Length: 237
Image (cartoon, rainbow, N blue to C red):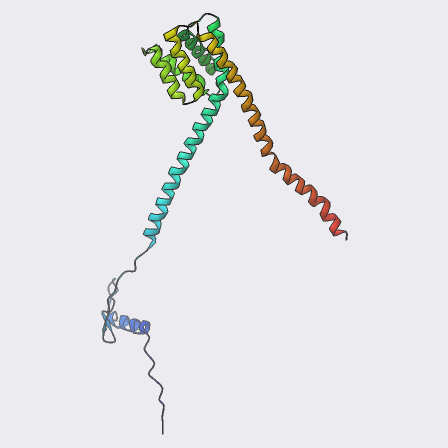
């Protein structure tokens, strides 16, 4: 004969802790709340649950810092590219003015002084945005006015510009100091012709870019027209 008895129901730990806690704090009239050190004959160790948000915050802070540095460098690179593009567009104009003033009999230092004065008056009169190429010319003139030699000022002008066109101009100006202005006229004339040709090439390239940018809007318009034509035809079937 086999007789089966039901097993003992295990006591719930939460209920045990609640009962023990009530017993410990039964006569407690203070502001503190005591926790039991043992329940059902077993030792209990209490500890505060650790918050793991600190690690997440540290990782997110590192990611945010890296993104901030990246975006700042990207913005600085974009500003530098914009300045160089503006200087490229201004180069033919600068060369034409230098050639014109040289033909009028002015020396190169006087030419830089004249261009700087005209540019300063234009800024004060029109209150427009600064023009990078003329800013560099003004910087070279202010260096010469401050006591820097012409050769060093022209070399600094080319190094600051960081563009092949203006570096070529710097080399021509330094050669002018060494060999005299007689050979500078034909060299400037060839440089002006090359600059104008480069400007026309850039204008064609910009036109092609503009045409490429228009492809997407034109495609969207064509899609809208097709939808307007096809949808009513399907709905009428």
